[in-house]
Image (cartoon, rainbow, N blue to C red; front, side, top):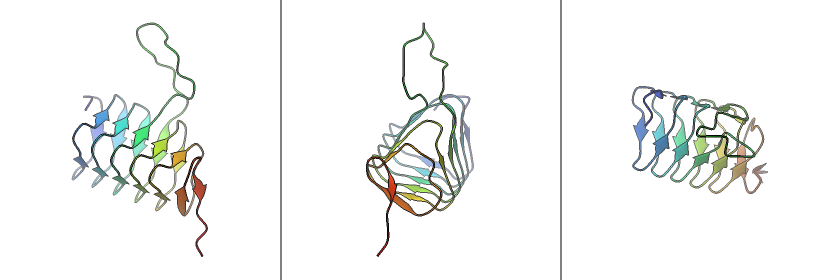
Length: 127
């Protein structure tokens, strides 16, 4: 966990999770093991992040000297979101309150309401 990360009360972070730089995590968040959260990520309160979830902050990564500071937008996860195991959250994405992201989904666009599954993540139509 990077010293610049801000982590709210009652938050649990699983083993082997890497939290880098300018990250804000709300209260009572549950982050399972083996997750990667780079800088430019903001996570609200009461969020569940399953094991192996990866957040990204660059669409087209390139090596630029010794430090890469280019970012493609902040990732914002609002309150009460659940993200299933192995999901990938792309740069510059916002996930609205109470949204469910299924396991293995790849999120490339903002999610506003409902349950989203697949690659790329699409809203699941409930029958």
